[in-house]
Image 1 (cartoon, helix red, strand yellow):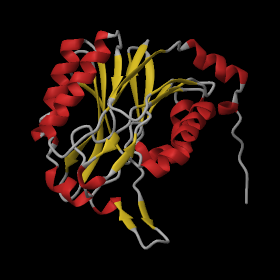
Image 2 (image 1 turned 60 degrees about the vertical axis):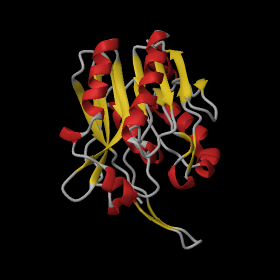
Image 3 (image 1 turned 90 degrees about the horizontal axis):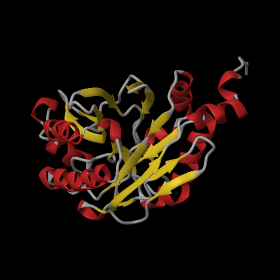
Image 4 (image 1 turned 120 degrees about the vertical axis):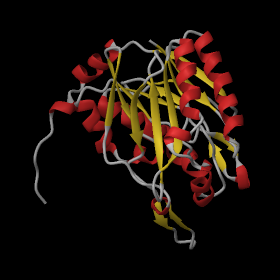
Length: 268
C-alpha cells in the first residue's frame, strides 16, 4: 500500500485552502498513493478559537465535504481529511472525515482530548470553551486494513492507541497542527512511541509555517513503521511525503514483542 501525507499552510479562507489541499492530493495520487491524509485544520486556521467558531459551518453546509467527496471519487482513493471545523449548536467539532474511493464518508471522528491549560507565564488556553470533545474512538476498515483515527493532542494519550491496536488497528493516523516549541521537543519521539507501543504504522500529516495572527506550526509530517523506524518525513515547507507500507511488518513487530497481550491488573 502506498500512502501519502499532505503538509500545508492553512489560512483563514476556506476556498483557498481547499485548492491548496487539492493540488497536493492530486500530486500524491499521481505518484501512486491510494491512501492520502491531510492535516488538522485543512479547511482553515484562524488566529483564535473564537474566530474559528465564527467561521465554522454545519456539516451539511460545509463546502469541504462535497469537494473532498468528489475528489476521492474522481481519483479512486481513500482520503482522510485530517480535520475540518463543524458547527454544532453552541460549539464546534474538530472532525476528521474518511472518504472512500466511491466518495462516500466511511467514517467521522471528533477529536477527543482538548487542550485546556494555565501556564506559569499567565497564558491560558481553553479549547473546550469553543470545541465539543468527541466521545468515541473510531476504526475504519479500509479494504481489509484497519485504520485508527485521532487528532493532534490525542497523541499524548497512549491508551487510546493501545486500545485501537488491541481491536485490530494496523495503521494509526494523527493529523496535527503542532506549535513549533512543542513540535521541536516532542513530535518525533511521541510519533515513534505510539508506533513502538502498538506495533502499528503511524501516518501523521501536519500543518506548517506561519498562519493568521503570526501563529506558527512545526510541520515535519511523518510516517513511522511498526518497529519505530521513521520511513518518511517532511521538513518546514508545504508539500507531500509518500511511503510504501508492508502490512506484514505489523504482525512481525507484534510477534517479536507481544506487549499487547501482556496486560495485567494491578493495585495502588
